[in-house]
Length: 178
Image 1 (tube, one colour):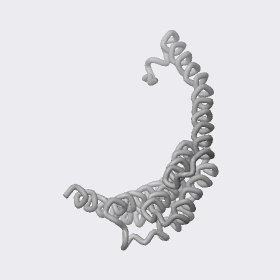
Image 2 (cartoon, rainbow, N blue to C red):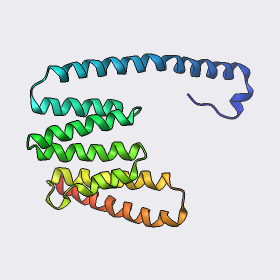
Image 3 (tube, rainbow, N blue to C red):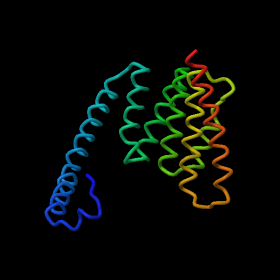
């Protein structure tokens, strides 16, 4: 759905674009209902599941579904996934969930909490697979912070730190290929 300035002058094309836009807006309710039905189905599976890893993954799945429109629900479910991992000694899954929590918090504008979550992760002991994700999470954090705070005096410092994590991420990504 796009148009140029000149197209706005043509009434027929303008009407067509308005119709397309209204059609998209009308279908939004359909997608919300579809997403809510998927969530009900996943939650039903969660209630029936006794397998620890399955419960962890279902909480993650619910959190990811909620992350784009209900941040508080996403946080609740990712925290439940973290508790499942902690209670069952699944350190790798716990780290994965904490990285996911950091992304959800950053996307929701909770930068202090996102930073605290990342700082809790013992990065010196991470497996190679998690280390690249860890650096990517810091990149994501600084990227969001950069655009959220318009203070230009802070931008260069944030950009420098973000760039450092981008370099670390690239190096770890290369290491993982080998």
